[in-house]
Amino acid sequence: MSVSKNGMVFNEPLLFELKSRGKAGMDLPETEIPLLDGTGLLAAQHLRGAVAIPSLSEPEVVRHFTRLSQWNYSVDGGFYPLGSCTMKYNPKLNEAAAAIEGFASAHPYAPYGCNQGLKRLLYELEQDLAEISGMDAVSLHPAAGSHGELLGMMLVVAYHKDRGDHKRTRVLIPDSAHGTNPSSASIVNLEAVTLPSGPNGLIDLATLDQMMDDTVAGIMITNPNTCGLFESQIKEVCDLVHARGGLVYFDGANMNALVGVARPGDMGADVLHFNTHKTFSTPHGGGGPGAGPIGVKSILAPYLPKPILVERRGQVQMDYNRPKSIGKVRSFYGNLGVLIRAWTYIKTLGASGLREMTQSAVTNANYLKARLKDHFDVPFVEQRSMHEVLLTDKKQQEAHVSTMDLAKGLIERGFHPPTVYFPLVVSGAMLIEPTETENKETLDQFADTLIELAGLDHETLAAYPKMTPVGRVDEVGAARKPILTYQG
Ligand SMILES: Cc1ncc(COP(=O)(O)O)c(C=O)c1O
Image (spheres, rainbow, N blue to C red):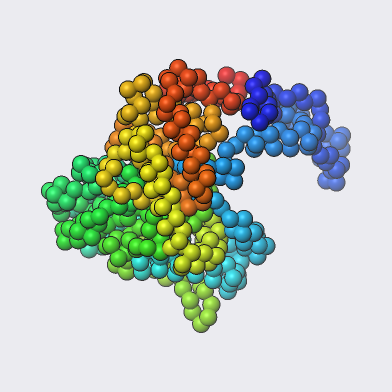
């Protein structure tokens, strides 16, 4: 048994391991259905063998799951600086809106003309996202950022095909991109070609000029990129790609650095996805749920998935009459709960609030950079950081202390670590994204802790974390020889 600093006991058995002596959480009433053979039992051949599920009382089950939930680290519980993930606080008003009866129980097959409130909300959200990004049309269908990327690349393929341009089978993707970019391109049979960044961590125009030929369908750009740097030549990059017949895909996962200040559509993007579950709250640690709406310029609008929302005679309706549409990528209207939260967040903050959100996110990241830059290696230090700051373990490596050691040390001190070993363009990366949620006191506590940990020796750090249910795990073993059943 291990006991944490706050006295939490970590010896929770699995439900299967709890002694279950015929207890039950509920009593089922006697069946009112007439029995087939009159004996009160089904014929033997219809009986299933004993089901190996634990039989436990309701309080035992509730306590088990409540205890487990308290082990979780959450954005409601503490600072969550996971770079590239924008783990911001999710205002409780969003939850109240998503739980409104008319939204929560809306039926997707409700008759034509029904669900007007919900459809109006979605229609408004589309318009707000178009305005925020500078795009002409928005589809709310995709259920995640990567799903938005996939849809965006399907549109790029449809566009070139429609023009009879069949040579374009490759996509340029900077080496700093998120792994989902090349995989989205590959799924639609485009070859993902790595575009090496220049020494300043940004896209190098000369390299792009060499690689951008008539076999290239487009480029996928994350801006700010995953090093937290703004692609200062974005306009020139987009112009060059357009001049050679390609399209620009803009990975909008980092929109928390741009909303209310700059618009990808004005920079030259033809298609972008939002990670609503980052930029507009509902942070998605643990894998979901999400929503990855895409915005497009009018040249791509005919290919959007159907139905699209249209306003006719004061009603919001679904338009299925879309002859060039690529079809469907998801059932019904999209991941509603997340979209309702995004609408609520946008309407609550308004235009000036959204701008302030972005400015605070960028200020917070730059504050941490200023606090940490004398203690850690900061790649591309001469560039201004946007909403996240990239450090490496280069200085600490001299004392054999690694990024992993520092991450485990942070856990020991009660913090969630930043994203580690991503992006891959630098060795031993620590990508810290504080978001606008945090105040100066929290940022200082985090910076002080990281600086303190950086001064510890390897032996001390190697023993961390001690105060968690599981200490250091054999990560290679966990990946190569996973044990996937509780019985081992
Ligand atoms: C830069 C970037 N692009 C795309 C994605 C994919 O988004 P999702 O996790 O919603 O599929 C992420 C996710 O972290 C990201 O950071």
